[in-house]
Image (cartoon, rainbow, N blue to C red; front, top):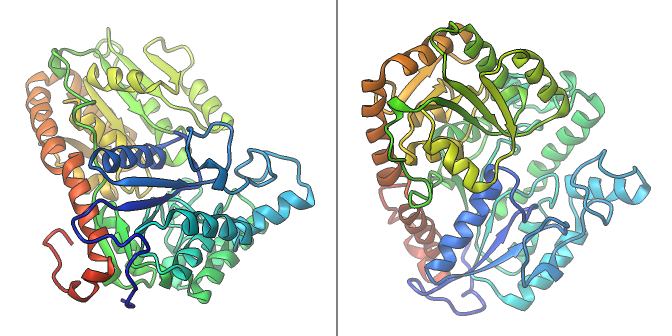
Length: 450
């Protein structure tokens, strides 16, 4: 760990901190954005000051710092290719966000100069803001913590998938070229080549050396990063958290509820098609009076596939994206929720939200889902992609009310005790504080949770 001068505002360990949070979106979209606004609220409630940095977008939440935000791809609101016409300016901005954006660096440099933060907490930045955010922090001697929401540092496709199946060819070969050969990024060898070159460029240039600590939401994320060549000592496992005051159990035990829920994005790797086929494999007489509610949106093509699979079955309801209170009600009123992913989930918000709602979870036995779902205690796990095994567990959830009710109590307790916001905040602020200059010489004194 390189020594650092005292942060510009003179923060001392134990005092309120100025935390600069970086994310390329500043509006709610998915799990990473829900985490962004959740940790922002937690930090502010604890008396810390939060300064956001992002890209400009019409859907952004209001912020006193929005004048510092960097322009989006074409100067409009596009986040990726295909959302605006491919003018030279759009291409240059996209390549800048993929490799290195001097525009982002200038915008963030101005913000750091003006607000003088103590620490920078980086969420999602690769392919949009670029490692320019790390360089800006290093130039000002700001400690940097990066939370990993995906595997983009070791996989150009970002999710260790080829199509809709797990692929670790790049990890095992020590090269990013398998992703080009297999056209992993959007089925395009050209785009796969660009992302592979960018990933290699970032590693060779040593941009990630500016990161003081990486936060992994689960053990599987840490292990994949170590397999990809990163030093284990640079990582801390701090699971994400759930607002257990907002997500609460209903008055009716799950054994009496009539809904099975899926909450999340509709993409092939999420396995929602497996869920629909498994649901339809359950005999009609057993799911009489029951409803499968699928809440979320995704690619138009995959949504069309799901609607085709569900056609003619009145017990399947594809609701689209629900508002916040709609998700709360759905999970609170569901008998069980299902997470049928075929990918290495890092730790889905919907899992912890289901637990907090007193709703057991049926999940694929893969990645962090195996870390969090205790089979027979807080839910059940099944072989990823195995429709017959999932159908059997759905049938069990319908008929075995006593077991379901007991699992619900344990799930709620797990959410409160292991994944509460106060515990997460304590761990995160302790990490921030230990990276301040006054603490830099005592980093060997790691608390047990590292």
